[in-house]
Length: 144
Image 1 (cartoon, rainbow, N blue to C red):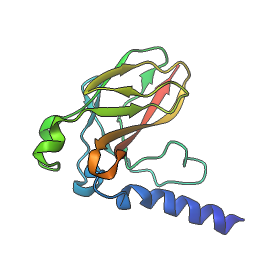
Image 2 (tube, one colour):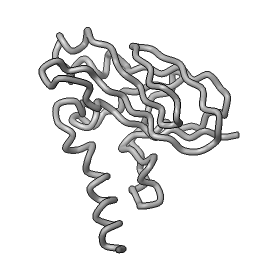
Image 3 (cartoon, rainbow, N blue to C red):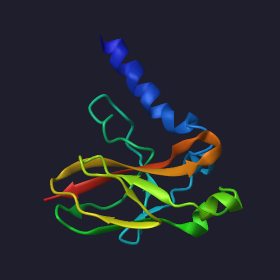
Image 4 (spheres, rainbow, N blue to C red):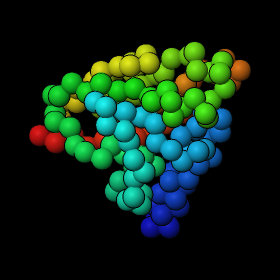
């Protein structure tokens, strides 16, 4: 059982590295997601079975408060060198993994009701792939 848990953690940790064309931030290793004008950084903590639900390769370097309005966006200047010009004209889909609905837009706002750690997933729409593909994922910490 323990080997299975370790294997799942390793596979989960590698998923962003092999996610294909939509994993631009992982491809160039430069965090591009922003939350209230704070750029994500490389998350130095290694994934474990206990952190798998919220672990991502990138993290916001500070905590936000429960109930606080958080404005999210991708930094276009950092994304531009990674994506094709045609892809830059598409919008993002944001998933906040707190039970709320996904939001679509270049800039969105969200408030977390409860303290904890969450994985923010950013997806891009690729018509050639027939749908939304994960572009970025970031760990966010919400304090009381």
